[in-house]
Image 1: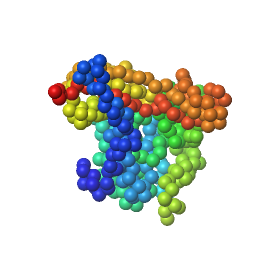
Image 2: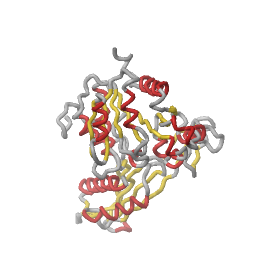
Image 3: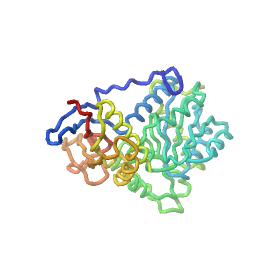
Image 4: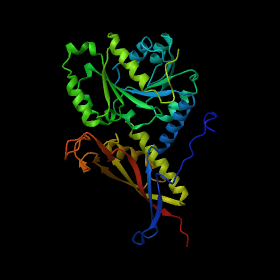
Amino acid sequence: MCKDCGCSLPRHSHDHSHLHHQELHTNPQLNDKKTLSVIHKILDKNDVEAAHNRAHFEAHNITAFNLMSSPGSGKTTLLEHLKEYTKLNYAVIEGDLETSRDADRLIAKGITAHQIQTGSACHLDAFMVHGALHHLPLEGLDICFVENVGNLVCPASYDVGTHKNIVLLSVPEGDDKIEKYPVMFRRADLVLITKCDLLPYFDFDVEEAKAQLKKLNPDTQILEVSIKQGESMQAVAAWLKTNLRQTTVGEPQ
Amino acid sequence: MHEYSIVSALIEQCEQHARANQATKITRVDIKLGVMSGVEPTLLETAFETFKLDGICREATLCMTLQPLVIKCLDCHQESVLAERSIVCPACNSYRTQVLDGEDMLLMQLEMEQEDER
């Protein structure tokens, strides 16, 4: 039983044997000081909650994607327009420091969305996403997007319980961002270069961006996207469809 | 600045271990930070020095080991420690590699004083 919300999913019991072992040593030179050897992930508690969130999604046959990028690279705009290109039913958990503007924008387009206001926190963690999950009607959804706080640094360290990471990089930001923020791009399953209709006006070298990404993350796909170019949006929709969790077969009617 | 949230998770873990081992004081906290874990060591240290004052770690020193990226090449089977942030095999330039270390943040060891049992 999930003790925070009373939902019926079990929290994965925390198995202390596999990841961390503990050993107590007494060091005679240190008098009564004891050294305890532990090998323990520092964000372990978050990771347990993230696994719990994933179980929630999977119980409803939902695939969850974590959308990360700098502020203003087009996460909300992408989600606003995606609806026109896919029959998959999706909802959005929005993370921002302040305001519910992003959720309002999506709701205005008929997309189910719930806003998390993080206050001063620069990232979403699994606990915040868990809280939001219980505000979303999960029945009938194929996809849940978690639109993270706009930031190319902090969100990379937190598993929020999604299945795959989508990282956006907009043309005006520059092709050097992959090299500058390697941890984020290393964790990406898909990189979207957004605002590609602006390529003629900026010195953004798509090939250079691809070469940098390959050094960090050779298996990741890059898609060039512009909401003004329908074909590029269809490619995003197609990627989402092929990257749904295996148990979901076929597109809903 | 997610280092503050990471430090609160770390201190919470220290307090749990202290309780489980009837410790009265933690004197040293050893952690290992991967260069690709996404934390900035100096910021983490500042956060630790600030947050430790309230609890059982108040006299603890934080010892950080920075763990570089270690990869194993799936083609030439060479293990390499990398200086740059890339996962390309320096021996044969293959992209087919497996990261063995350098992406995690781990609590490794705690030094504590326990209640006198004599």
